[in-house]
Length: 216
Image (cartoon, rainbow, N blue to C red; front, side, top):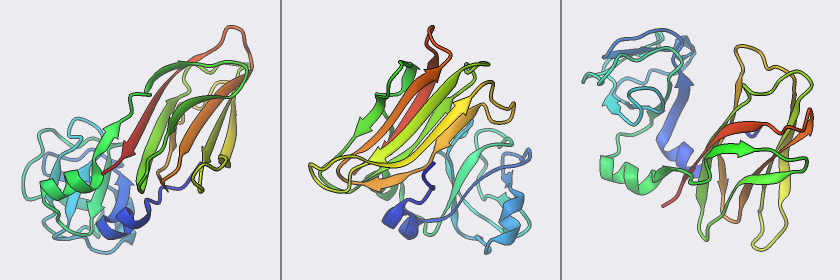
């Protein structure tokens, strides 16, 4: 799958992207991987998933011990498995809204596969934008089933799509990997996510899919 790089915006705003690996508190999140990162004291942490999704707080104290302490409490305890960002700077809320405009695509939802590739998500713009990522639930994939997923993009106005990655998922997926995530892609002219069921049908599977983008 594509990497999680987010081009110019990431370089300008994002110092670290991670996921908590233990239960925290309302004023602390835990991520052992931070021990190998620079100290992010006095940066800003933004919660991307869980009960506190969308909340941001000032970091207060060293983070090199694998813990992020914040100056103001979150609305809920930060659980394990919560995605977060640490920002390079502390933009105002208005600046964040202007720069990110993160939104859930209306193309999200339960998708019934067919026996040929179908575009489950496709979008473009006239100025640079970010396909922020996708989440695809493979829980319904059973023995004998095979699901193929393809990611393509356009680099030329009016040009053809170029395949960036393509993977097959066969049979019951591991307990710890029932869903897949597709990382972000900077783009202008088009991003497309396609899927089809190449084995085990009919009946055809229905898979929940979530898509996100960021436009000015």
